[in-house]
Image (cartoon, rainbow, N blue to C red; front, side, top):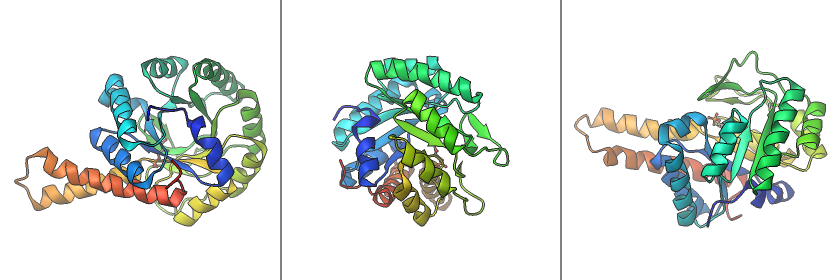
Length: 284
Ligand code: 13P
């Protein structure tokens, strides 16, 4: 299949009570591991690409790899800018072939975030590209986005509802207590915020920082209206652990395929597990 906007599957996800995973793309092994997982699970998915990952791989490579992966996987795939920082970056991605963009205006004052998001929605929707907006700040580190967990601000439900009404974003990221990266303890998810916002807007809620969130909390979030869940760190941890073990136990290993191949398999296994947990398996 060719790349599709998230609107191809997110409205159905919210209606039927499952979530579609955003799995971040870091290199070729991530692209292949994620696509193989989706093909095996017959699951739609979203490739998340941060600005840092884009600098690492190059914009043209990212689009080319995602297009080939979508054909190979034979499932609906969205290529999505993760935490886009400006109108210019979003437009550059759309021009290059992205089917979806996130604008993270959460560090701007509320009214300014609405205004900037509206500009992106207008331009993106005109060319059939879906948009995710963000309200409240998500703690932890995700490439260029760093937020002290103590200072991370939860989303105010009333503000989130008005944000959606005024911007008409296709997916609504709200800070509900999750953070990017692994957790030191168990995350405290504010289910009441998810519930209140989800009941009052059409778009599904996006849960960032999906790595390390207990399965039961993921299921409860989906039940209340989360329709998109982002996972990056858990795939990175699984991949790197396998590679580290191999390089430590076999110091003579020099052929990258011999350690990157098993790393790729670990990514696939992690992603398949998440697709089953999110209920997106078989929904392609
Ligand atoms: P994790 O790295 O914690 O899984 O979060 C990913 C994410 O939210 C990307 O935006």
